Amino acid sequence: MTEKIGTIAGAVWTALSENGAMSAKDLKKAAKIKTDKELYLAMGWLAREDKLVVVEEGKDITLSLK
Image (cartoon, rainbow, N blue to C red):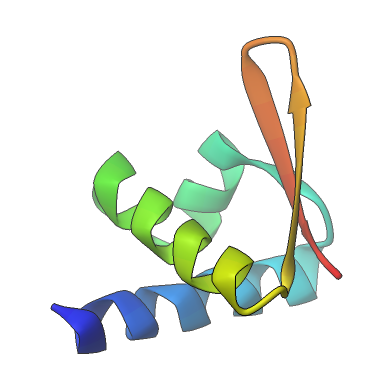
């Protein structure tokens, strides 16, 4: 599972690198992630590596790279 999360985190990083800040919904689509769980695991991976900025805006979150 760790390898899969790392792969998804790479797809998230690539999508943010190419597109800039995105909502979680748009990021999930851009990175071709199948489930919310996979997105959140990848977000956690990147946040732990201090590579992700997460901004909460009401019920939504916007993600970008540091």
